[in-house]
Amino acid sequence: MRERISALIKEALGKITKEEVSFSVEYPTNERFGDYATNVAFVLGTLFKSNPLNLAQKILENLPQEEALEKVEVAGGGFLNFYVKNEVWFETLREACVKGREYGRKAPSGRRVLVEFVSANPTGPLHIGHGRIAAFGDSLARLLEWTGWQVEREFYINDVGKQMELLGESVFARYGELLGVKTDFPEDGYRGEYIFDVAKKLIEKYNEELLKLPREEALKISSFEAQNIIMQWIKEELEAFRVKFDNFVSEASLYREGQVENALKELEKKGLLYEKDGAIWFKSSLFGDEKDRVVIRAQGTKTYFASDIAYHRQKILRGYDLLINIWGADHHGYVKRLEAALEAMGFPKEKLKIILVQLVNLLRKGKRVSMSTRAGEFDALRDVIKEVGVDATRFFLLLRRVDSPLDFDLELAKAQSEENPVYYVQYAHARISSIFKKAEERGLNPPDPWKTDLSFLSLPEERTLAKNVGIFPEILNDASSAFEPHILSTYLLSLAKTFHSYYNKHRVLNESEHLRNARLILVWGVKEVLRNGLEILGVQAPEEM
Picture 1: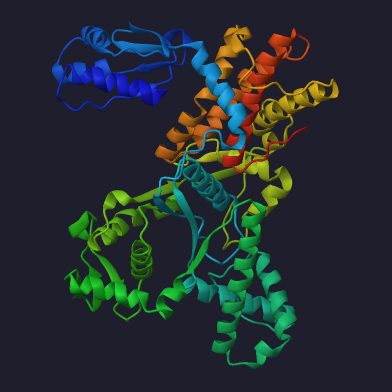
Picture 2 (picture 1 turned 90 degrees about the vertical axis):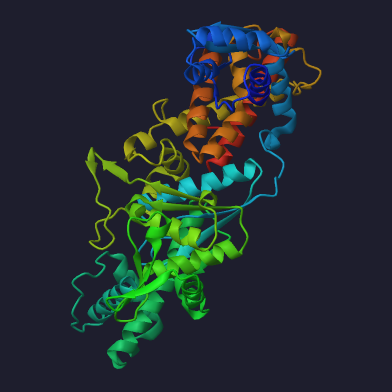
């Protein structure tokens, strides 16, 4: 419906001006001001230095007729308010009931997108900060799929460099300690209890054999085994969190396959590398970065940035229409340099979307829990899931924009009350399931959506519920286009609130046949939307609670 209204406005504008005008069509917070409203007259007012009220009236006079609209009014000094006919919303109710699990889903567009997310270092279990990235990335991927994209999910494994050496040293030290051999623990090593768990697995596999090897070889084996063990933990934790990946790409493999060398050679051929102070630099400042960046250090070792360039060159060669990187907020300094590298290789900057995710403040009895993997004081994602469940963990992590820090209240996430948002939404779905179960027990079959007379839905709350079902595809499009799944979370909460309020005041089954059937179609449509929306968020829609 919103697309139709936008098209009407554009047609009216074409009769008034040849200028390209950017405007929005929004949902008014109060339904007294219509189902949709636009600010186009204010945009035109700025453009022409004219009174928005007069311009709104002129647009209204040039609007084509539209059968779906009850009326269009000028209000608020220049806003245009659009009122949709009840029958339009009732028709979308029928559509939701008939389409079921496909309601809101767009046809495939053929556009390909690669979503890279989590990509945690294989040095320890996932913490709740990784969990926020995982929930966000997975839900965004689901959203994109629902809105027609062909999506691939990818995890990049940073398995090269000093961190892996420290991991090997930390594990080997604990390995020796468990076998009664005194070894020096690295000053910057990983001190979590999980390092003992890894060391125990090394003892199971090697007994005391590693102690007999030259230290360098023993450390290499310790690092390799630790990476594999921890990556297996990470994969299992993600799967338990309902997050799956199509690809796992190893940084080490980029070196083995010569892709880092190839990427640097390509930049060199373009004259974009130079030597300074014994190091090799990339001219990233030519492409908007604040300064040039080192790709090969003076001692000959390549930087993380060098392998990042190679990795993203590989992504480009795979032919995606859009690349999405979801990173922790601590990577903000890498954004410009990576954009510069891709632009240098001929990849349009607008085809790369980097989303930075802020930290989660995990609260226990009002106190924050530290999340440092190196100090061993973090609270693992698996512990949070064990305490509050996958559904609550995912929903809470998707409640806010990811560019803002999030306070995760464990006690609220466990509460079975309307204050708990995930419980509130799931309970709405369970309540509707209960209505249909009771109807079945009474021998009542679900009504035919196409044959049911919905004109019996005469209450304002019923129209509001029908409208909320009708705008579900628009909400998905908004959330997908903005890359913000929290838009869907907010919408589901609002829909659940409207439903609970209606359910608490009005009966569905104990009414006349015509009214009962109309209300069954109404709550059926709500149920389909709740289930589909929760599925996109990776949250279950229970039949009973």
